[in-house]
Length: 289
Image (cartoon, rainbow, N blue to C red):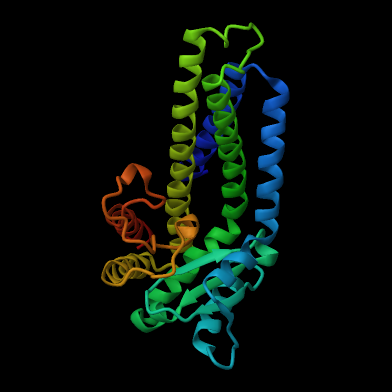
């Protein structure tokens, strides 16, 4: 088990504990269960249909092997090498270099790349990127992200209810201390801090997933330096020409954040620093030989 996998397991546990702790502070078991149920239904729908939504959002079209034989060859060879089902291949007509993977499981995997990334990268670099995306599919990162989103969504929902109830004096905990002035102040503070904490944990899970996909993808392609070179090129390309139609809610799906992120602290980033990813890949290259 890799350090990134252990970190993800720890963060998922932390998110669960945060949800239970907030429910304990609120004291309303019925509300906790209801919030979690709503969040689960919303994210269950997202889990089953998000791939269709995001592909339409970016106007991605399924690529034909006749039109993109080199790309298909890379995807097929890596899938065979990794004993993975052949994913569907989509093309986004966008000059910004980038790529993402989606699909609820390996049997329904989708790899989407922009026209910009195909023009910018050589075959080895593109192979490194595709291997990274296949690692996301194989690692069921969509499922992990959905579970994290379920807990984070439930926490945010509970926090909204708690803040509303505290402000209007309608909150009562099991021990009935929630109605006191001190209890209401505590509840307002908790309702503000809990969603922030949940968001930070969710983003940390996303960053951990990127490290894990880098490592697994590099081991699959046996070309960690090619992936490192691709990340440097993609990052530079995104800085020069950010994706105009990119949605912040789907930024975490891409191999590099398609938004510039100016003024945003790294703490709130869905992706780890590119420099650190390149450093790790170069270290892995020395290890692989």
